[in-house]
Each structure stands twice: as C-alpha cells, then as structure tokens.
Image 1 (cartoon, one colour):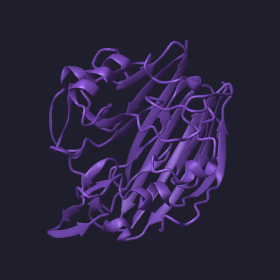
Image 2 (image 1 turned 120 degrees about the horizontal axis):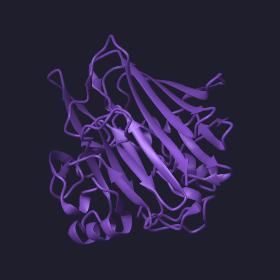
Image 3 (image 1 turned 30 degrees about the horizontal axis):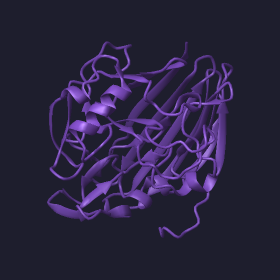
Length: 326
C-alpha cells in the first residue's frame, strides 16, 4: 500500500438507551467517535482524512502485532523481515502498511441485549512480511442498558506466525484541555524494560516510583516525574504486566471529576501512552489541543511473552471499557 494512496472508509454507528453512541470505520476496524449524551469521550479528529491517514492510529485496531518488535522475527528456523525503522524495530505490525490501514468489511448487528458492528479482513500470507494468511474479525458492542464499549478480537492463521492485537483509542473526557488532572491506576507491579536507546522491550522489572500506578495516581505528578527520570522518552509510553485481580475487578481505571473508565480484559498486560506528540491536529473535542491531550490504554500480550500462534484454532480476546458518570 503506497502512502500516497487515497484512503477511504465506510462508517457504521451504534448507540444504546443510556446516551452512549459510537461511530466505527471499516478502515482499520477503528473507533472514530464515542460520545456520551453528545459529549466526546475520545479524541475525534475534526477532519475525516486526518483520522484515516494519521500515523497516530486514532482509534484503530493495531496488528498484526501491537507495540514494538524486532524488524526480523524467527519462526520455525526461518527469518521473516518486517517493515522497520532505522533501529530495526517494527511498530504496530508495520505502521502505515499494518492492519490499521487496511479496509475491512463491516456490518451492523442490532441485538436484544446489545448492538454490534463486526469487521472482517483476510490478511494474505506475507503481508507486511508475516507468514500465514490471517483471518481477523473485530466486533464492537454497546450493551443496550449499560454504558460500556466491548471490543472482541478473533483471528486464525494458516501458518505459525506472530499475532498480538490491540486498539489505539485516545481517551479524553468531554473535551478536557489535557489529562493532567486525571487519576490513573493499573494493577501492575512489573513493567517492560527498554533496550538502551530504543523503546523495544527486552526484559521486565519491578516498576520504579515514576511508573508505579498500583494506587490511584495523579497523572500530572507521574508525568512530571517521568520527564525528569526518563527524559529520552519524556512521557508515559510503557508496557505493564498485570498482577492478578479478583474476577470482577478492573485491571486499569482512569477518572476525572466527570467520569470513571474501568478497563477489563483477558490480555495479560497493556501499553499506556500519554500523547505529547504536539502534532497539529484539530479535534471535535477542543481545537488546538496539544501536550498531554489524551491517554491510550492498549491491552495486549506483554511484550516479552511469546506471540506465536498456531494454525487449526480460533484465538479470541476481549477488551471491555465501562464508562461511569459521577
């Protein structure tokens, strides 16, 4: 796919009886907008073309492998070369060549208890260098009587390959100027350690104080600490391995004076990114938003764990975001 290719998308809408409404795109099986009683919950680029083509992955499915992996992977004693940067690191399965920028087939499915949209795509053997034809199905569901967004990710492969999907929604409640006054909590005592000079995770270790979110923590305080302690990164953009939680408890919680967002998933970890990119994008939420304008909470397989999947079975993971007003 050429970066000069004009990207297009179809859009499907979901809503419930409690004021939650979402717009979802066939390009990248993405979430373009999510509102509660007409107020935005996520960053929504004002221009559709920005949403479609931005390398910031606004609301899109990430894959074949979310996060950063080596530019060459080895499977069954054979090396596979992937799209990579100057450090030989592949981001989100190939950046503008990845699943985030592929056209899925989409269809809406009204239901008695929830409304859903289902996106399907067949990634051919060798796409972005990965072996195996990969059938991907992404379902977004909104329960009729609960304010929740449920993302179900299913796939199967024709050959042994690497897969770890995620989603890149950027949360910003009701057009907040930034996320400084939000509190954030993760049930995680271990995080991914980077290879020196890069953001490729090569090990894990106990969380240092600036990355310790086991208790609800003011984001401004932690982000200021990160800027001083980890200036080469300059923001929260780290992977965490979940500690065990009680069955009904969330693994991550984000809240401010208006809302509480609870994240539950069967993935064993997540990456968290606070956007400080300063890209010149106008949003429906608030024009001119820049530093610390949103936070992406991306459940996925922890980076140092095996991402090898086998043919002959269907794999399935679920991410659930519960939205509660105060």
